[in-house]
Amino acid sequence: MPVGPQDLKALADRAVAEIAACADDAALEAARIRYLGRKDGEVTQATKQIATLPAKEKPAYGAAVNEAKARIEAALETRGAALHGASLEGSLRDRVDLTLPGRPVRIGRLHPVTAAIREVSRVFATMGFETVEGPEIETDYYNFEALNIPPGHPAREKWDTLWVSNPLGDDVKKPLLGRTHTSPMQVRIMEQRKPPIRIVVPGRCYRYEATDAIRESIFFQYEGLAIDEKLTMADLKGVLYSFARQIFGSRSNVRFRPDYFPFTEPSAEIAFSCVICEGKDPQCHTCGGDGWIEAAGCGMVHPGVLRRVGYDPDRYQGFAFGGGLERLAMVKTGTPDIRLFYQNDLRFLESF
Ligand code: DAH
Image 1 (cartoon, rainbow, N blue to C red):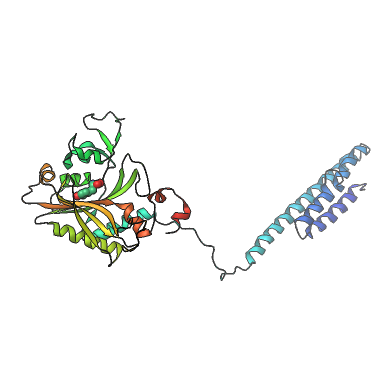
Image 2: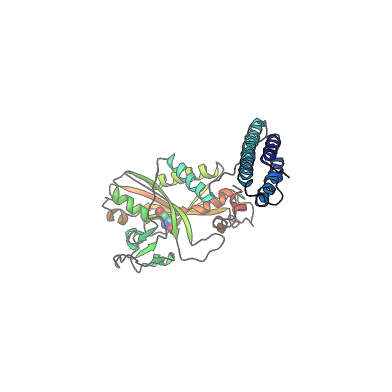
């Protein structure tokens, strides 16, 4: 127990030397407790002793206690800083093994439908078609009337339509709907441009429809339109034939059969030969066993449609086609059910 100022100086000398020799944080903490610990620290004991001293000794002794305490605190701080600096330097000296294999970085990938959209755009671009997009919410006029489907026309029943209420108080004579196909963009583009025109329109469509393995109520189509002088059905067949070969490979074939659409005359349906079973598997999920996959509707643009946008049908002709995009993606990726595209199951999406 220190009894005078001299003893306190000796105590502080000893503590400072000991602290300076501490090799790590644990030793430093032990030294702090030994000298400044609240209960039994040597300096703490000395502080408590002040009260027991005769009044005239108190000032000198008190001053010595304070000085010892200040010196010890300063020593603790200095040594602590030195130890931490040393540990940083030590870690900087650690060798890094640059030959270790890196940790794999998770990178995203294109959704199969996005990949199909890009592929369709790329293939038609090789034949001079420009990709454009149009509104998903359409007016009755562009979705139906401009395409020769007036109110009451039986063709409207082919499309299970989702009407949109007019929250912005738009003209009730122009009812809005989720477009049932991408064909309205044919009319919008013809209104905006003069021939020659060659466009392809990928885009989302909506139908009030129960979903199953090949139908979704929200789905994608791609639409094509070419307008020029002297275009014929042969041009249409050539373009779609080339498209099928570029998408599905040189073994694929195209089948044209007569069909009916109000906005084309004549109209046809195109089917691509099944690249999955090549027509050999009666149980094939992709083609249903008949070897053909119905892919799109098409035809020569109806003169009434041309006249409505101010084109002279005696001078200009054109062909158009529109097909389901997921259908292409399903065949290309061997996906048996359209719903898989929209369930966001990473096990499925990461397999591409
Ligand atoms: N829009 C039609 C549908 O959704 C498909 C179609 C048929 C598009 C003939 C066309 C066409 O461009 O010429 O069923």
